[in-house]
Image (cartoon, rainbow, N blue to C red; front, top):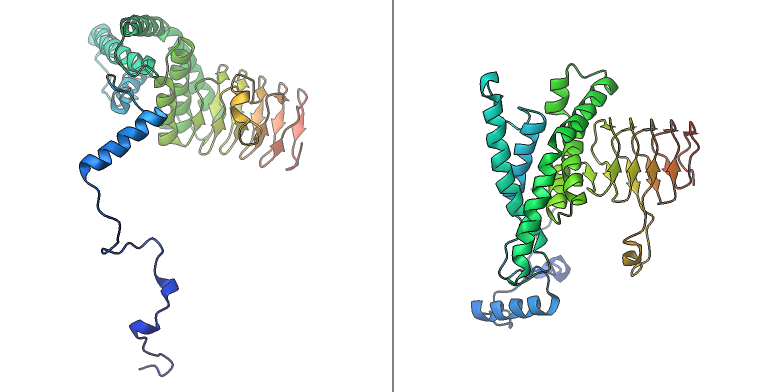
Length: 319
């Protein structure tokens, strides 16, 4: 036995070593019944109104994920996991998926429109009609949406020498996945859908580590390389042929507590003009900040001032 080692009696253990979160089975607080707990929670719901949706279901995460898989199959056939159809059955395959998508997405958009409408009322029929109209208009734009996605895939292929094929880019690149979901969600948001667009981009955020608000305005041939940790805020405006790397933030200036809501309808995030290149971990903040066409923003930079077209930012503390 090690002579330097001393036995420790239970009495020698300091009371500080006991977790403050530890709860004794003999606590004096009485256990509450299911009925009592239900009463307390119901009272809390009535006081705050948070998530009180009696009479209506919220959009389903699983259904929204299924809708995204159907959309990815339509925009990039096969990338959603379904086998590509034989050419002789292509038209029937497309028609069946569009029909399934129309029903599924209309229901979820309708549920999203009911947010803030806690009980059935005459407006419910109007929400159903509005959702049907929104989804119909969205589906009308699928050919143009597919062209936008194809240009993003092409930009990623041309921007990354490690890419071996367009199929590899479309199937494997997290930036392409995140931007594809953003383009879907952005169109639905512009048409008036609520909740569902945010659910879509947050699913992509979970899958890829890339956080793009569906309200951002992003031009054609957009490429996010690697992508992990990228954040693009709601009022960001991004031009054509922009390329950014992992860890880039297009964000807003922080505000004191209580002032945030005052900025809700103002431009809070930067504008990135055409052909800009932003390297890894750059942070660009502010609604008045404009990065001019063809500028290059170096890695690990902090930018809160505008940059002239063709400008270069290499120092880590600009602004």
